[in-house]
Amino acid sequence: MRVTNSMISKSSMNNMNNNKINVDKLNNQMSSQKKISRPSEDPVIAIRALRLRSNLSELNQYYERNIPDARSWMEVTEGALENMKTLLGDIHKKCVRGAHDTLTEEDRASILKDLQSMREQIYAEGNSECVGRTVFTGYKTNSKLTFMKDEKDTAYEITEPISYQNIDEKRFYSNNVKVPSSSEEVLAGVPMNEMPQEYTFSRIRLSYEGMDTLDPNNLKYKAEDGTMQNLSDLVFPTNGGYDFAVVTTDLSYNDWAESGYKIDPNQAIFFKETGELILGSDLANYMGNNKTELSVTYTKKGFSEGELRPEHYFDCKNITDPDHPLEYTKSDQEIKFTVAFNQDIVVNTQASDMLTHAIGRDVDELTNAVEAAIAAHDKVKQIEAMQTQAQYADEDSQKALAQWLEAAKKEATYADDNLKKVYGRGETNFQKYKNNVVLAQTDLGSRESRLDLTENRMSNQQLTIEKLKSRNEDKELSDIIIEFTAAYNAYQASLQASAKANSQTLLNYL
Image (cartoon, rainbow, N blue to C red; front, side, top):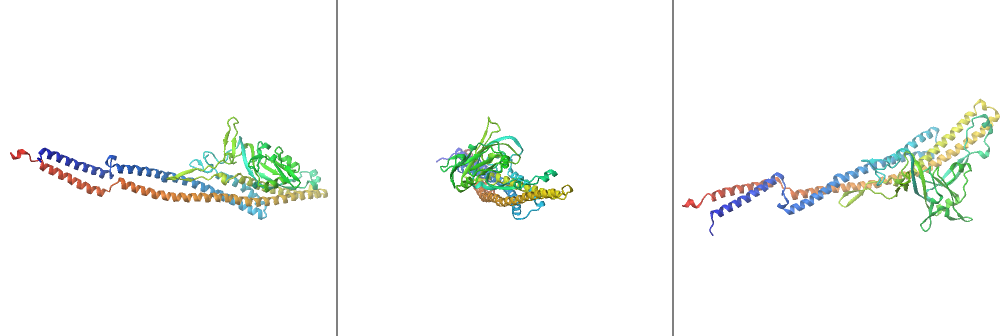
């Protein structure tokens, strides 16, 4: 085969160009320390790079954003729960002391001063925020848990479930002493039939007081077939046979008190002023024995600052604007953050699970009991002081004041006894409320532990994928330098060989 100079020249140029391309490729690798600069250089590396970069980008979203956001939410929740537990624990300690110790006048005044501030602070903790979002209100993170100011024109229609488990005892008192202010009132004395009296009834306390309206037909019980029936249609057995439940909703609390707290055994009286359902003895026994579940629908207009908003607890309607009512349905509202591939975690704790209306209602009853005891003992002191005054030094006045003092002391005895019983009930209730908060803390702590494990796994996974990505795309500089040196030497050798091979032509031999 004849090899011409032209063939040698073309072959030399091809070899030089290939070596130059190799030098250029390695030069680019040395500058970028990447194996390829365009997909066409190695499609396999390019495809793996796209897959690894996509996975790493998603993992960085979880590890650097979602997990820190979830942790921040949980930390805010944990701080609020810890404060609630402390406050409820303080109230529980006061209840223990009040139920088992004899309280002095200073003790009562101190307890009264503390109770309301603790009540307000407990509910204020429910308004805790994380980056402008309320953490205890489920999906309604733009809404506070409580009313932030008095809203006298705001109206709701509320459907509240109640249970036989909510039945407890409450004591009512009549003929409370009114300290006489003149000699004529002193001499009138206190007849025996007008001495302070104590009455005990079974009652169910609702979440709110000061209701606007309640239709008797909206007070229902769950029948044996599971349907909700009017309580007034309930027929229940008594010692003498069967009886109908009688539902009364139009009697005022003051009128009932003036009547001597009269209630029939089969009667249920609902007081809108106090938000209480008073049960006759037979009806209360039947409901307790048969574990009766109830539901009541009522309207309430006007809410005070610090009261819990109904939409976070009940099925209800905001009917402030009757033409455009806002309807709310109570449901389990879990807020989930995606913290790993195909893994979600619940970050929120719902207030309805542990921060209920009953806490505030119990504090109010404690406050009322303390105020009643303070007032009763103040009456005793006033009458004792009157006994030493000159204008009442005569025998008739002293005899009459002795009757007044007996009545006042009887009222004070009732008040102290009621205070101990209310504190005793509070001792149990606030331990339960505290346990609910501790349970919420435990649940939150388990979720935080899961988040810690996920964070560690994401950190390891992030490191692994970064290594895989680097191994797929990157190239060690030392290896590039060695390859570049070899390629450059080959390129220089090809230049020299080509120069020698192409320096001789046919004319040199002629």
